[in-house]
Image 1 (cartoon, rainbow, N blue to C red):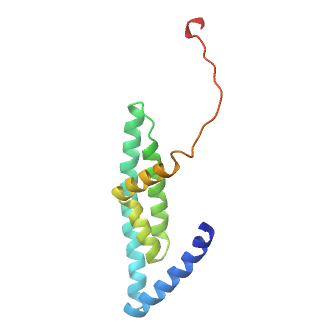
Image 2 (cartoon, rainbow, N blue to C red):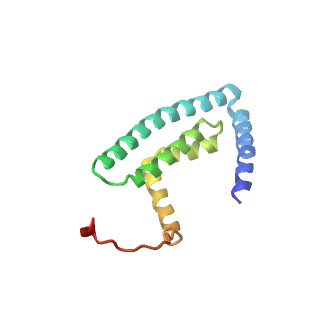
Image 3 (tube, rainbow, N blue to C red):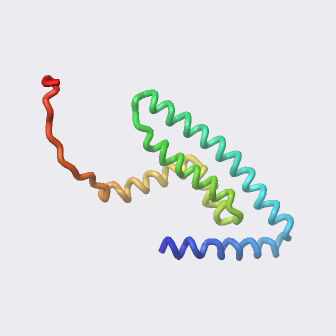
Length: 131
């Protein structure tokens, strides 16, 4: 299913670009694609730096910045989608650059995979006083 979706998105994007080009013309369509890429780059820079600062703050506090790392990956994917020509990928890219959307998606991913992740292993206790 993901492979099929990956293969269909470019065709869907081309169809939408052709339709929009037919409605508003080729140059305005190209202008919209370039404009969304420029806005996306600006948002990518701003959101990426903000996430980096939050991750650095958590590291300084001695905490693991797990949510910041996932958020950073979502921002990178969103930026890549915004640089891809097309309105569907732009909509998905903008959605990933909105902090509330990333937080909602993070909670959905956690709910989906919470019970599926099992780390198995063995351990044995060592008395600290013997060191």
